[in-house]
Image (tube, rainbow, N blue to C red; front, top):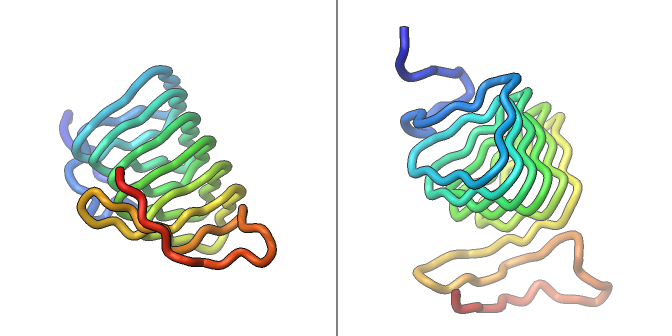
Length: 146
C-alpha cells in the first residue's frame, strides 16, 4: 500500500513528506517544510524548515540548514538547526554544529565544533562555543543580527 511510511524512531517529527531509500544516491539541493527521511545517500545542500531524519544506513554530506534533525546514520559537513539536533546510536556527525538544543545519546560520535546559540526574532546570541575556544577565552554572550 502506498502512503505514509511509519518508522518507530520518528515520534513527533511531523508528517513524512519524502523518503530517500537505502541504495539510492542523490546529489543536488533539497528543500522541504515537513519531515524527510534519508536512508540512502545525499550530497549537496539542504535548506528546510522541517525535520530531517538520517536513518541508520543514511549518509548525508554537505551544508545542512534545517528546523530539526535526528541523526542515526552519518552526517559530514556543516549543520545548522533552528530547533533541535539529536544524535541517536549509532549516529555520527563529522563537522560543525550550530543549534540552540543539542542532544547526544550513548553510542554516538561527534567530531567537530559545536556553537550553542539562543535565537529570538532576527537576533542570534552565542551562549557557548566548544571545540574552537583558545585558552583563556570566556563564554561571554555575543549578539549578531542576521
